Image 1 (cartoon, one colour):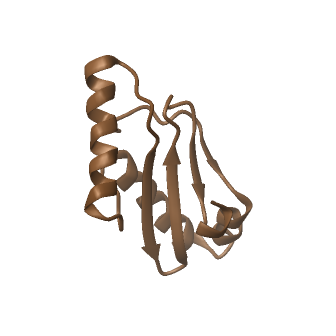
Image 2 (tube, rainbow, N blue to C red):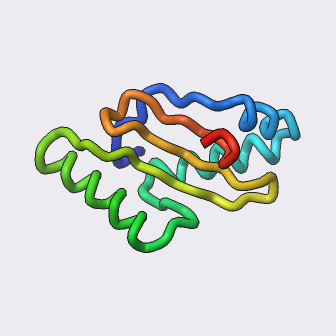
Length: 99
């Protein structure tokens, strides 16, 4: 169960290339998405993690937020970013080069 609405989850060409590396890569990406949805922001500094928490708190209090949710994960297949838009309309999984 996710702490927030994700909207549709989309991937960029770099992530699709990573997924083509095989089942382990796909499983790794899915685990990172699961972590993101549970509020485990990965390899962010404490200040950035707090920004995400502030966004979740604001959403709970007001029903909306102006801030995206951002996660970063180091994997055996390379670093990936996951971004959920501030209106929770879409979540994008991408590589740092595509950011």
